[in-house]
Length: 105
Image (cartoon, rainbow, N blue to C red):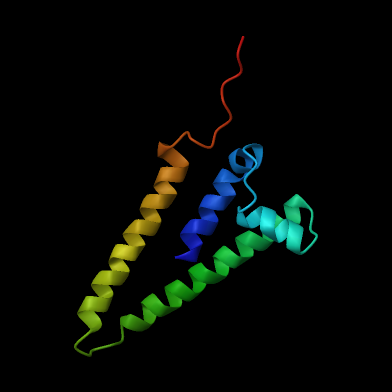
């Protein structure tokens, strides 16, 4: 799911750039569209928002389905929702991998 990878790129930008990585979506958008950093971040956030909106629309459309696959699809989508929430939780509260190293005295 693109929204997970792209959200990770928002969090990992500084670390990846400092490490010389050029595959972060923000860096790619910045370079390819000749944008400043702030605008590139805004563009990536808009891409993420678009994917989230579409995901929610599709999830909502499942609630009206009564066919034989509705239960299986609903279960899969519920799992995806848990994955998305878990990734957000991990980025916000669990990992410190993208924080700058502590200043040495």
